[in-house]
Length: 374
Image (cartoon, rainbow, N blue to C red; front, side, top):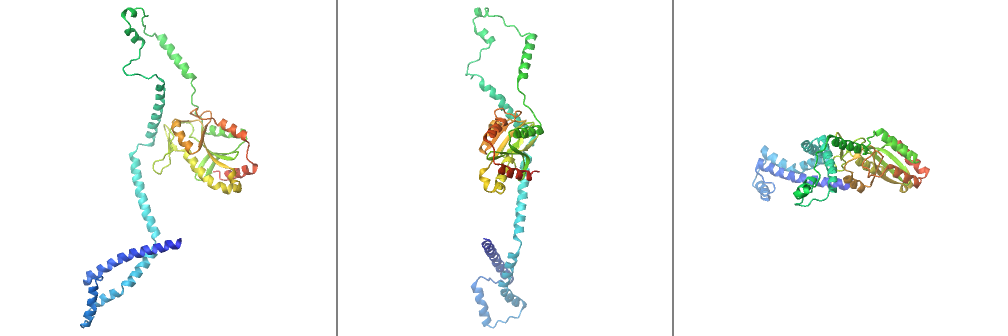
């Protein structure tokens, strides 16, 4: 393969140099002596003049014949110089120049976009407004030309003789208003509030629950370029687990802008998608698991889990399909939202009922994971 590439390189340079050199030689002889070197009639004039007694006695004539004699040697020297030239560096310089130009255009495009903080606020407001509109779907449909009848409207629609029989409407008193407000406060106090938990508390909860279920778990494992929150060894599988950035409401996105990593947005900040990091780390771990387990590799599957700790994924109904297509299992702790996501406790109960791997396989995986801890 290397010989073929060298041969191709030689042929391309030879053809290009031949075309350029041939044109340069033609211009050289024509501009200096008016001699068209590729015209055979011009070459026929030289022996004819020689027979007529032409004697080469001027410097111009001597240099003319010397130039003809040097055509092939100069071609060979030029080709040798081209073949020895550092074309790899030349191509790299061109590539880097084009890449820098592309980066400049990319930065110019980014500068036209709003800041990440502004974009996060717009996305959050959009998701929240979408949630508020869901309640309107429960209202009965309103037909064109039909006005809902309020108590005041009913009174007007009745004949005057019947209106007198209805009790007179009285404006609400201050006591009625106060009672209504207190009832609203009591009702709001009974609603469950999202439990915003610190990241340390969430990690401690995951570790304690996994150990209570009798499973081996490793915290903060460096896999490739990413640090994964947990690696959980279960029956026939290793689960790589990432948490959401705890303590906020997030709009999740798994599509990056051009070649950038996808971002998640909260009201005050943005971060690289933890699910994106999880997928990248899983691909790397699958590639090295053969070296860790040897012939036992087929006994263990590498699975992905995203765990919602103390935060909330506002657009979970939209993004969950994307996670499901990437085979990412989603669970939550008791403080995580939305509540439609299954609990991590249920997952641990299922794994506990399955049993566990052989001690030899567990120790191999555990030792390999601990060895690359940051």
